[in-house]
Amino acid sequence: MAIKIIEDKCTGCKLCLSACPYGAIEMVDKKARILPQCNLCGACVEACKFGAIIMDVKKEEIADKQSYKGVWVFAESRRGEIMPVVYELLGEGRKLADELNSDLSAVLIGSQVDSLSSSLIGYGADKVFVAEDKELESFRDEPFSRILVHLIKEEKPEIFLAGATAIGRSLIPKVAARLRTGLTADCTGLAVNPEKKILLQTRPAFGGNIMATIICPEQRPQMSTVRHKVMKKAEFDKNRKGRIIRKNIDGLDISGETKVLNMVEDLTQKVNLTEANIIVSGGRGLGEAKNFKLIEDLSKVLGGAVGASRSVVDAGWIPYSHQVGQTGKTVCPNIYIACGISGQIQHLAGMQSSKIIVAVNKDPQAPIFKAANYGLVGDLFEIVPLLINKLKEVNC
Ligand code: FAD
Image 1: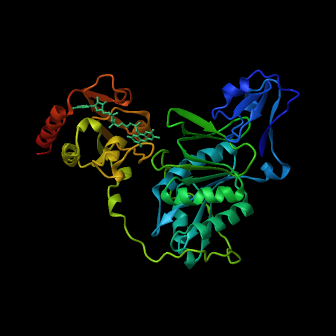
Image 2: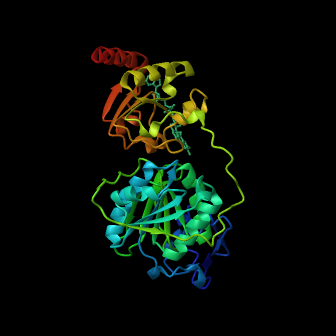
Image 3: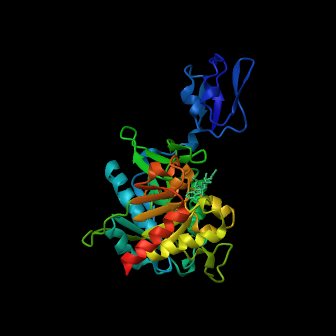
């Protein structure tokens, strides 16, 4: 695939220059020229009013779109349990499949995972494809990606969704690259274009300053990863019926180049922020590391977990496992209390879907107040101890 300039048609109007977000076009002798940093986004093709810029796609690179049908969800499991993000993807996948008038399927890979199929059906899958082998007990990129590529080539789903978990982030780009299709990571919204029936994948771009909607018009499947807690979990229906389809993977090499010797728990990841119902987070307004004690005390009295902004994680006041935001965790508690956090877009990206947001900040203009349901303007060193004392009284 390449972007080409048809020189005879180029008028030198420079519309493409201002449309290109990557500065990947220059003018030479009043004709546009594409530079190596072009990432083939196609913005210039749309901007050119003279048909002088084309996306040159080789015939063999275009998928036979009509033969691809259905929505698939990668049913990631660990130690015999389905990851919670899968149920959220089934909820979203169900909506997409209904809109496209097609089936929703889950794909389970592992050892002795068959028993997990019924819960996937209960949460909305019409079919569950199962690839089992005792070699697949622990996750390894190579065999898992080989199996997924094999199943996708055989069954041809038009949309493929996976969790943006550590496993999803490692596995899915490999699968997309092998299938020579596009992948949009960390989507925050998915929808179907009602006319063209293609997937609209929305995610923050340019450091979280804009929301971009990305499409994969030519290749199939259209692949997206989504973080935990961004989408709503599907409702469980114990009466739902579906088909379990066991896939034969005998002919595939699933031994792989790597071996899992042992699984060691990462002790720094102990805080389960993504599952907490109440989170109290601290930011640079705390002044110094030792003042995090105040945040811990408030979270303790509420029975919640401790979160943090990136600034304080970068400053070494608290480990990364507590970071909330675009490059940290996405959380959706019932109550999120932000203390001394300004509310930059990258922080909001990780917590703005919380049910109730309370902000404590001495600056009444702080952006966090735009996202907050309740705002307490004042010094956190006065407000937080008052809250702790009052809550202790109520709890007694
Ligand atoms: P500040 O912006 O410095 O805000 C401190 C706030 O405390 C101020 O609003 C101030 O009024 C208030 N304050 C000060 N003293 C008091 C007091 N005594 N009482 C009450 N209020 C007080 N950030 C994240 O949080 N998570 C991310 O995942 C993340 N990812 C990023 C990714 C990229 C690519 C980039 C470029 C940035 C990212 N950031 C992220 C950083 C983000 O842009 C902000 O810099 C960061 O969130 C600011 O942290 P803060 O609110 O703690 O600090």
